[in-house]
Image (cartoon, rainbow, N blue to C red; front, side, top):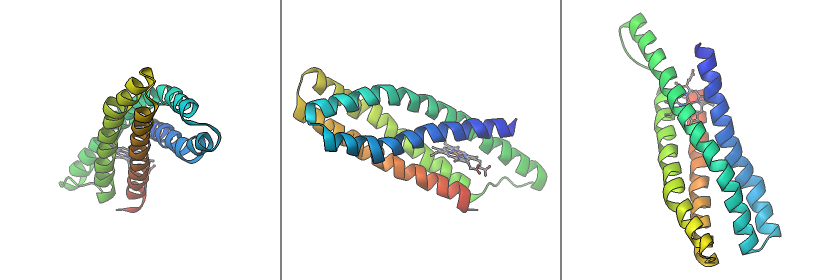
Length: 156
Ligand code: HEM
């Protein structure tokens, strides 16, 4: 059962991290190189419309499986040793993971709606600024994601 929970955790992490990696390293640079603002903004808006619901599902899966993995191991260690302790890397993953979720909440409920409102009003400069905000916070989340992965693998 624990292997299955960990598999779901990994699948969700791969969807979120892989999606951000593709967007930041391939899609956006290609859009910047080939398209001018109105079309570029429309493309990014159409991409986010499809990607963000995937991130929401990934977050629910990461949080439920992550806390399940954490508490299951915590209880087992406590039963075996009398002391409840997990590796520091796990606590770091919890902190980085929660930070990523807060950052995504900001993107999804603040920056992205601002972008959508500006697009609906054909206000390209404001939409461009909101898109730049989404981009900046996504870069931050991508970095936090790697810190979480490095922590869980390397910090004991
Ligand atoms: C509330 C958030 C999270 C919690 C509580 C959590 C907790 C955990 C726990 C307990 C493990 C098992 C570690 C082990 O067996 O050695 C784990 C593994 C893992 N987590 Fe998370 N996690 C969270 C969020 C994330 C996020 C956001 C990512 C992606 C960026 C992520 C990526 C991974 C990966 C790749 C592993 C696999 C490590 C391995 O196979 O040893 N987790 N997580």
